[in-house]
Length: 268
Image (tube, rainbow, N blue to C red; front, side, top):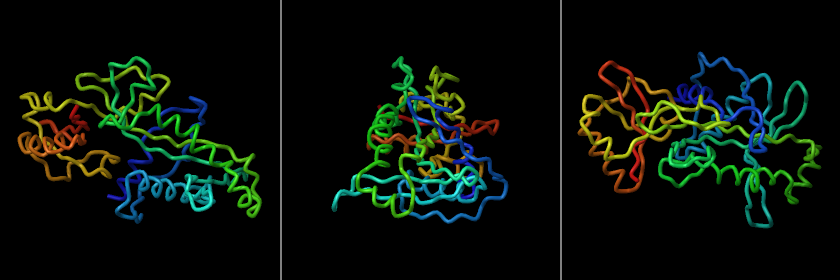
């Protein structure tokens, strides 16, 4: 599973390339992912923190970068105001990069015209544009917080010379019956599956497939056949329980020919 997780993270495309929205996208170093299985991932962490461990592990094994530190706390007295995800050192140039990491799952809402507003979490509580604002207005400025000035001096780093970038990876889901969506300047290679409302999923069109409801950590990986599959009726019962809690699960759907696709079934 951990090997699959490393590969799933690595092969997830960035949500944009180069620079967009005033944010430079981190260009992930090329790695040989063929035999990567030896990786211990701490349990009982939310997905975002687990992705930080994955990112740190992959970067540490690259030839291009050194992880100087990660999760550096920024505090005002006894009040924690935030943390810096990663400071990396480019081994060739000896320059430092501050990288903020994000790994997101967004559905694309066709009822909204502006691309950056079309992306939202499956439960409609996580919006791409609010994440952008948080990155630009809260997270990246923490590099220059007054409380860190003595720290930079102690390790002989000039914070003004640290380049700031984002590693923003995402899986996007288009409405069912659509194959693509207009999201430029965002990366269409991020489209990983489809989303559907529960009432539409509860129809004869889906009864011949088999289903698996992955754990959240499995959302990252490529669907595979080595799981316990359920029929449509069994899956409906379990999905309905999630609907009552206003929780949109991901479902792997295996059609009779053996092909597998990712679906989000939404409650709203």
